[in-house]
Image (cartoon, rainbow, N blue to C red):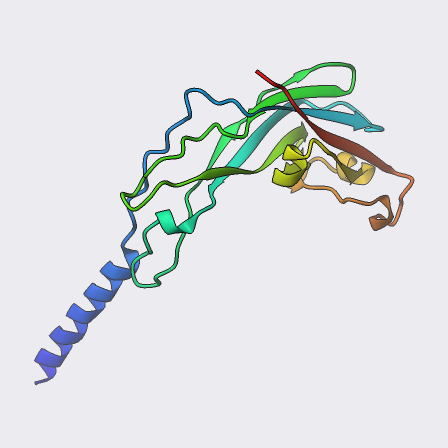
Length: 195
């Protein structure tokens, strides 16, 4: 009897482990070959205490209609697919850098056989690297589409302490810093660029 109970318990554990470890097959995300919603992201640095070794960027996309995505095993949750693409920033002035993005870069289509998935931009980031610090301001969907500016403030002390690896996303207000006189800013502005 003990052996049968032991075997039953082991089999149940195996089933549970398999079910919890089950993963939904991820679709092959396709790029839109004819994107038309083009925007330029302009990054302007003001008052930085020094230079940055490199400037990179990325843009995040997410499926916005969960009804096109099958439920995950066991939990029954809907996990919308997400993806990230690089943004190339090029120098456009002494303290200005420009990068081009497409809001409609990911192809809307029926990825799971239950309806068309619609993709949308979540946001775009500019990554200013100094030492081991990534100063990473972001601009999000509504500000990109609305062609608005977003300012993030960073501490000069953070710039000076670049030997510790970290991502610094800054703050929306100078008053968030104890030493408001020792801050610099990075402004991200979105501008639509008709094709």
